[in-house]
Image (cartoon, rainbow, N blue to C red; front, side, top):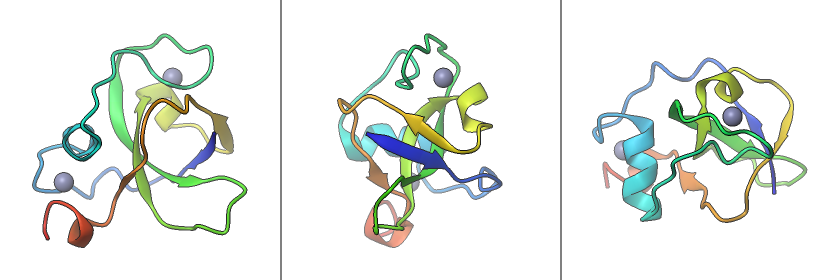
Length: 94
Ligand SMILES: [Zn+2]
Ligand SMILES: [Zn+2]
């Protein structure tokens, strides 16, 4: 699938402690390597992303390495990992 990174949102924390923890908690998944195509970095963060080429403009959390978290434009990432809602009202602050 294709996603695009939303920049400038990393300062917004949630009660999970980090957005990567938030992603792990609500996806039920864990990840070792950055799921972007061809990337083997392990310095993962929970990135705020949107689906690319979709009318769905909601914000999601997806694990990316810190380099890819700085990227702009579309990223091709693994379908094996879920997009978790970044809306705290729908997840950890429900
Ligand atoms: Zn959370
Ligand atoms: Zn990466």
